[in-house]
Image 1 (tube, helix red, strand yellow):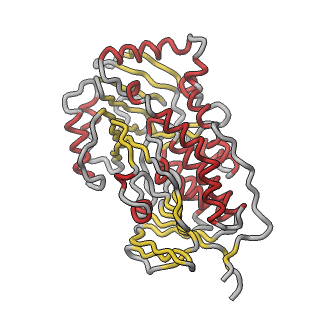
Image 2 (cartoon, rainbow, N blue to C red; image 1 turned 90 degrees about the vertical axis):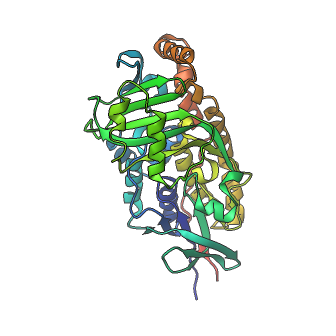
Image 3 (tube, one colour; image 1 turned 120 degrees about the vertical axis):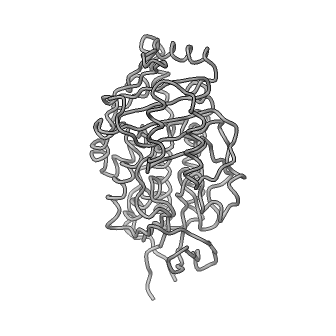
Amino acid sequence: MGNRPITVLISGASIAGPTLAFWLNRYGFAVTIVERAPALRDGGQAIDVLGTGTDVIRKMGLLGQVHEWSTGKRGTSYVDATGRSRASMSSEVFNGVGAGGDCEIQRGDLAKVLYEATRDDVGYLFGDSITSLTEDEQGVHVTFAHAEPRTFDLVIGADGMHSNTRKLVFGPETDFIRHMGYYISIYTTPNLLELDHWEQDYNIPGKIAGSYSARENTHAKAVFAFESDQLDYDYRDIAQQKRIVADTFADAGWAVPRLLAHLATADDFYFDAMAQIHMDDWSKGRIALVGDAGYCAAPLSGQGTNLALIGAYILAGELAAAHGDHTIAFPRYRRELLPLVQACQTFAEGVGKWYAPPTNWMIRLRNLNVRLLPYLPWRGLIGGAPQKIARTIQIKDYRPHETTPTHNP
């Protein structure tokens, strides 16, 4: 029996998983992705592709497609209960979107671009999940909820903050999750406020409700976030989560009742804690984690997508550089990426109190800062913070080796 390509199973088909698959396939690995959802998941929030994350997309040859799906959002207004703007900021001033190829895109749209770029070369197994992982000298023996058992040389968990792979290999989620004190919900509505590539947000103490246009203004996304101690709920029970959002914002003013009227029928509803994942290591034997599964920085950081893109690029590159030897590649992957993970998680620590200020006084102070920002001499330092963080590390120029990584039986 001759040499064969190294086989890799990736759990999760959102951002990190397909990005990792793209690069591993380019480097000669044989890749399969298993995804619990029955089809590619649409929906989710608008996400920023910034800095080194943009560099990864450019290296993939997908920057043009990503820009075609760009939200084109021009800015945001903070409004009072009557809808009157109290402070506004352009996207360029606040986070530099549009500079250097950086852009904002819906999570589901980016997932589509990545899926289309990998579907012909990567095996996708939708509507299934891993039930057990057993490692020995031959590889990782995997059982699935539906598919027949298979053995892979490597397994990578790219299955998000509530990673099933992490639970099976490293232990319960409670050992690694750090609650940041906030919850967030997002779903699609009609463009009720007739927004033109714009976002409106309404604050009351400890809560924020917003709407921003999507799909060339034909639709909008409703966003609700609120401060809270850790809640006891089933993260797979959508009806329960919708009740939490409805009850929390039942007495809020502005356009909240109109947005909530579409909550019950929303088929792309998302709800979760703003939380981080902290782990001493992202790998154990032949199994590793990438993206939110290993080092979620919380939506408050604005860097989750960049961590997924950059982490996947580095992991694939180090595996190729080590000719598939995970004992060399996994530690190098962590060493290269860790400074960015730490910077993103630290940045997220203090963002919540400005996103959903806990008092009316802090809401007014935040609005004042937003109004003054374009005129402050240090506006570049404040507005450019996301880009600076997104370029905490410089990525190597990994190149495919002349010899395809193979498993020697």
